[in-house]
Length: 161
Image 1 (cartoon, rainbow, N blue to C red):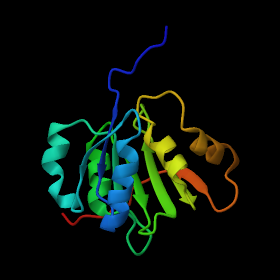
Image 2 (image 1 turned 90 degrees about the vertical axis):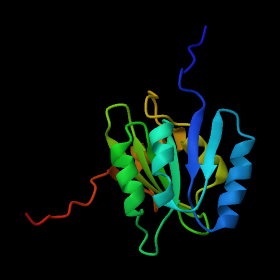
Image 3 (image 1 turned 135 degrees about the vertical axis):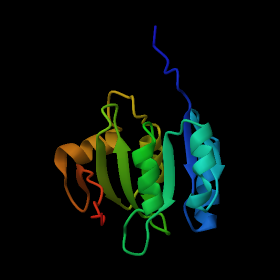
Image 4 (image 1 turned 180 degrees about the vertical axis):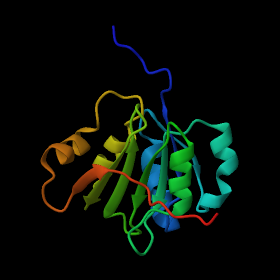
């Protein structure tokens, strides 16, 4: 008899741009068993109420022009124990994945030319799963080509006292 995850399905918020890419991703995920798009909006700053109401698994955002993940998304990642983040380039070809495991360690992956199949595989991962998604396990083991993997260390800023 197989055990079922009491937190299934995986809850996802899409906050990536452009809107056309976000809408296409929402339609693709809509028919995917075990994945529920809770909301798809463009403004990260409008998501704080949702984060207080729902225990989300994934936040999908857009990489900024410098290839970095928005500060708001990083803040949600730190504050939400179950949350992982995928940041997509506006054309959807590149992804930065900040994947939180059960020990609250955040693993960082960069993927080039990511496919929808690979993205869905990643989004099926939950913080309390025992194994990484196969596409990321391969990257972690081999670290080949233009992909990279590391443990995420958020940027620390000095504050004046």
